[in-house]
Image (cartoon, rainbow, N blue to C red):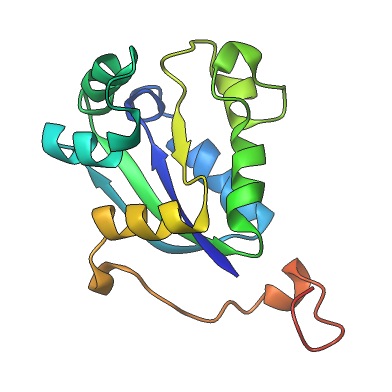
Length: 156
């Protein structure tokens, strides 16, 4: 089971797409460990997007990310990072396949609705940036046997 961080960016909030996007993750079977609305400060945005510093899109990304509230979520599930990234679609909305979040709701190459961790190390770091330990909740889901094949007693 993996954890991943999701950021529903300012355009997702402003366009009132939160419910539709969150529902996709819940319907897929992911467990929400934590979720909150927040305004990302410039210093936090720079820390989060530090790997992109110096690239031509870095400053516009910082302005965009800090322009309005966002919703951050910590999700948990089997192969969560890979599956969530497939659900998100290609980075540029204009290139994202229909059926993905960006493919269904994004056209812009800059305003792309959503961020998802790209590796287990990034997920751990990013979740730590946006959530305090006491803001994350581990709990048993009663439908886990229906989400995953547990016929062997383990999640497969």
